[in-house]
Image 1 (cartoon, one colour):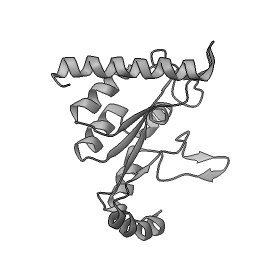
Image 2: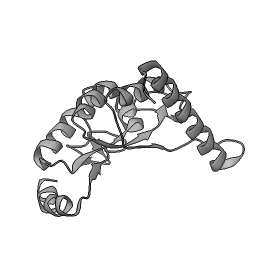
Image 3: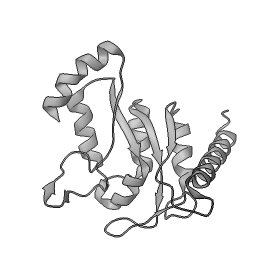
Length: 170
């Protein structure tokens, strides 16, 4: 990572490209015998940002991965949003819920997992997040994939409207 990021940062800065780093999915310290040491925890992300030392390198915050990791992440997703969001380091968000942290989890609809997704959207609005939020890995449903994405996007819109109303934004 260090070699790669040091090579690409000057080019990204020159061209105005932002690099959003996605967490390991799932964020396990080891997968199939391969050590995964940097994008599987809060401290790993903090270190990655220190190494990059660039306004053009930030997070693609995958909430689903963060929720999959649970306590292994070192900080919960709300603390992570507050820490990196206040620095303007969250470039994009993948909004996804799961039924439980690892080792056994199932991806769910936003309103059906173990985490209250409203808390995530509210925290993003509190730190004035201005990037994009993507409906991520929707479960299958009657009506197919497009119906599942339509449901997720409508739910996300409702969460944002609620947060904006409560925070006096909009």
